[in-house]
Length: 487
Image 1: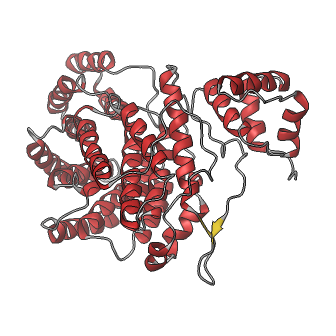
Image 2 (image 1 turned 180 degrees about the vertical axis):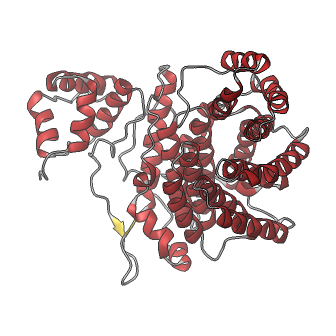
Image 3 (image 1 turned 90 degrees about the vertical axis):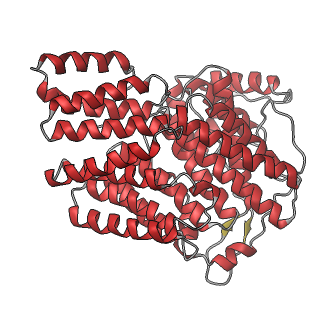
């Protein structure tokens, strides 16, 4: 049944420059390469997909996703093409909206990671730096964060029925059900990948994390005992959040945001509201990096409220620091002071408690680092915040020493240099910038380069000083010029 033009498919089709006949031939050729010899797509079928909104039968949507992904150099999913069929839903209690079943989350996970891996194999790069913002978050996830009861979430089915979802074709073997030892190994792998990311940045291990996440998606197509299934969904949430952070770190912005949403959806399947809230907070941090404070603040309020009564003090402290960053970007000094004051109190209450694995990096050094960034941001509106930033950034640098957190140390040094440019101390600012330049070559972090470029714009007012002119030339040589910094 047609439902009117498929505007999503039409918009992406227009970007390719293909004719309808070319697309039909590419679908047949790619389908044959994927073992689907029976496809006989023609121009009239393509026209009906675009102009009438007809949805072709499987495997054509998957083939189309692969063809568009390769052509556009970024992950294009079946949903992006407007070709996802309505799914069965699990009916919620009376008065609650229907919620998606876990099989759809697993399908999205495997499809998206499969396409991302294909781009990596073929040496293509995601060229999309635009962030859709909150619009990328499904309504069902907003509804769950906004009020579905924890008890009800815990009782929802957690299993994916083998064979029901339309699985994407990727060149990895099909895994069977996982046992406790395998799930434990997957949990440990997340910790290894996270430590590497903290040390060197997201560029070097991103592909490995995505491959691991794709494997977890395959495992989730099999039945598991409830507790094992819950652990698998949490592994998926942790790996997806890490894949999103690594993607953001290397400038794959739209891809990173999609991974954060997948992480929140996986946490939803595990019934873990705080984990979902932390994943959404990463979307907000990404928006803040790109200067979109109002949208980030809206997301943080959703994340904070949606995390629910399970929220531990340390997680609440972390969420407060991100919300404070958004308020600082808008120049709201009183709100910043309140949020950071509460963050310190919550940190003291919760620092001695055991933490879930995804919160174990939010330690005292990270608290100081975030406070320094918040006050440095506020200092552009209120110069009195500058010295508070210096106080916190020095504590962060001291606590990170020797802890394998080179990327965070570079960011701290950039924060300190930025404050000194703002307070009119070019000599001290130059010294801190030199220290950052000494460390930055050991990382693969576009996010760090972006911050350094932003700091360099503050140094421009002192360009008449020979030492500053020389320093800025060295910054330009150290930081690749291909990516424009966020405004």
